[in-house]
Amino acid sequence: MVASRPITNLEFARMMRKARPPMGWGQRVAIALSGGADSLCLLFLLQRLIHNPQSVSTLSQWTSLLSLTIDHQLQPSSAETATKTAMVSRALGVPNLVHPIVWSTPPFPPRPPPGAPFEAVARASRYRLIFDIMEKEGINTIVMGHHLDDQIETALMRMGRGSSGAGMAGMRSVRRWGMGDGEEGGLEWFGSAGMARWIARPFLSIGKDRILCTCEAHDLPFIEDKTNFQPEITFRNAVRSVISGGVSAPFFLIEVSETISKSIARMTSSGKTLIPGSEDLGQHELLQKYALLTDYLNAHTYPSPPSTFLLLTSPSAAPPPPDLRAAIVFRIMRYVSPHPWGSPRAEAGRRAASAELISKRLWGSRSAEKPFSAGSEVLWTPVAIRRDGRMRFGGGPARDEERAGWLASRAPPMRRHRSAGGREGAGLERDLTTQVLLGGADLEVLFDCRFFICVRSHSLPDHVKDALANGATMHVVPDGRWLLPKVVLRGMVGAEERDMILGGVDVGHPEAMSNTSWLKVSYIRSLDAI
Image (cartoon, rainbow, N blue to C red; front, side, top):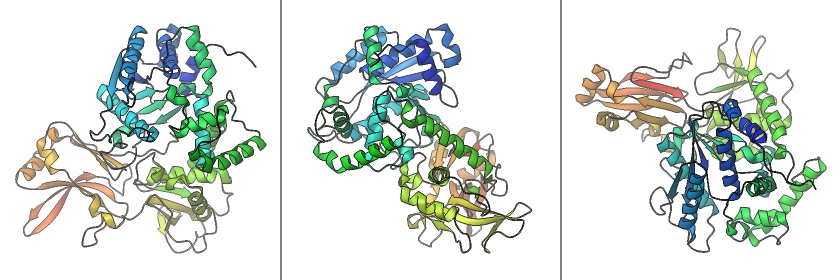
């Protein structure tokens, strides 16, 4: 066995280049610092890289680093541990913020009782607090110390839950934070702000042994959390224990152990490995798939109304490979769905059965195709592209000189979004009047998890101010087949209540979204892989 060696500055610079967010690092970057070997090693290497003149091209406009330590308050010594961690960070020249989780204070749930599983709620609470600090501090990217061993554990956990091949590839070196999940204002809800923040994980290609070697070589005083090795506490700990051969599978792993064993056998037979030190745990293969997927979408996309996606699927052309079809389907669904971007709900729960069902319809026979939906409130409609570029709905398969395709769009609202009179989308309406009249900061609205609307109250046109002063109200309402947002003034004209359109999205001109001195509307969902 080759002896472990410390991570060099050149190696770490390469890792950071791979983990760089698409829009760059920004002027300030945060690091999640628990005080353990992984995060402390990462902090040391980041600080060393910042002060190395050769790192300018790697870090671009970086100017400062801030470490964030979350005190979960689940152990008697947690406050003392957090204080020691903060002192180590400052000793390395990096300012630190310690924040305790205030259990039972919304959006945080009650503290888990002693002996109860706490992994999921602790993680969700930690991420909530980290995100809130990043917002307050104006930081767009946080760097985390997950490494190859963590990647293996994640893959095994997903094996046990029946994940697809894409899920098996584990964590990405960089990913968008995303909108989260749950209800607006809840613990795991991040909304539009989550689309502009990033998580970077530069250590995913190296094992724990090299991290420990680096800590030892530079006398880094890391803290070892003994609970990480107690398999009865968390699912990840149990998987970690099984990997190390320490104990037999705990009771809550028994049901999934057979699934894990079969998945490992399949990977072994195909030449793959889950042994620590294996290069990137399928990341290279995943990146190749992403490249193929992007190329396919670029070649088979046709302009369509705002918030929709038109996929060309000519019956005479060969369909994409089977392992690529699910990825294409999920990517399009995530782009169109009204469920939070990045959540499983936006991708039909990432269920292989849903992807297979949709794929058969998209790339199968079109002789009697009709619109259908198979999850995520996405409607798939067969269309034909005429010679003049216009879409034709219905009327059978594409005719001569027409191109066949499928239009993915937001499905008609469910009953909960209908008014008592049956008006579609009534539940999507937002009354902005009170917040606009209060003035002050810009009013930001996430409409249907698809559009971002910004109203600059201090810059309202005079006629809008006058109308509001005379009792009119301002609303965002869904409009037309595609449920596009319109900002309207609602008031009495004679004996009737009428809407005056102030702005929004013009379906006839896909790029015509309001962008004035007081109103801005944009489509916020991304088609990118991350």
